[in-house]
Image (cartoon, rainbow, N blue to C red; front, side, top):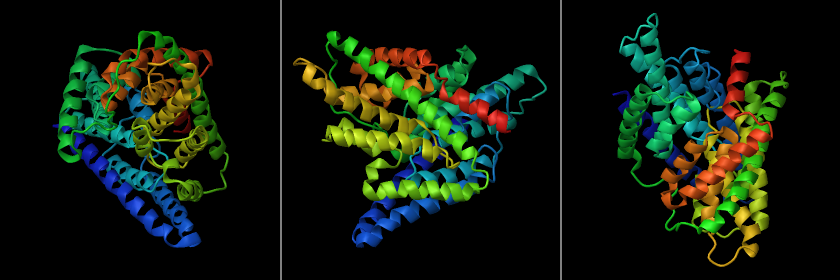
Length: 416
């Protein structure tokens, strides 16, 4: 029953975001016909959206940001589970922030809302916190339904299961696996009644690359791991800088950040938003010059951490996947003159880049590989994905980069 509710809430959230994206596109088209004055429309739109979303998030504890770090803290018994007030705050705040064009992902709010539903299911099931077994079952429900939220966000039930075992809990227990499987399958099946069963980022043809290319993907994963480590550092550093702006109200800060993102949107909408449209274009072989790839990569590399620092509901995963697709496509563009005939194409590098950059930041290689396979339907690329994620993990570790959600969880507990 809780899985069905996660599917309805998460599927409804995705449906609303899809329509918000279309509405934003229509507004931008209408603004383009207004000349120079029309460039102010996206600036005002995103500034107001960020300010309103920030104001909503401030009314409920833990509503700002991704929420995944809070789910992990609850599992570790470092924080209390959220109340039902989180659901409307995350849903409405996330819809406004992401829908207005902030560089944020839908998965964070859906995971957090799923975990809140799991917590409510535990209370409805009368799991007594005074009993050790019941308390553990309640935490399992909280984590398992959070994983169901991730599964709904990307239509990836196995990715949701691995996310719970590899990232949230760091453990594999039969009881936890069964709870999560029931939750993810039920939630994804229910959400498909709302958003359909199509792949999130379909890739028409992706043949398995020749085995001699595995060292190439190993090197590609190494560079992606370094990029992921730098991205994690920038996210944390941006939050620290914003923390020092004590004289600036949070809502005003969010509005200023939103205005900056809106200015980027006025230049090119692909520079902003969660990144699904950009990733889809790259996977479809959309023609972008090397200069355009570098510019888009640099802009989104900065815009993602800046958007996260606005203290609105929103996650990191989706922008990371877009960043990885850019990095993989750019890697192919630079390496293709050196590769012989029969080498993998740009789409394969983009898919591998998505998983590797994600792994470099989150440090969950199996989750990254399986999540991308389920999103794109590219099972033939599993070997390159796994070896690139391995390289990204080792590289980020060697560079001394801490998994991003460990850092964010510690920061959350210090500020509590």
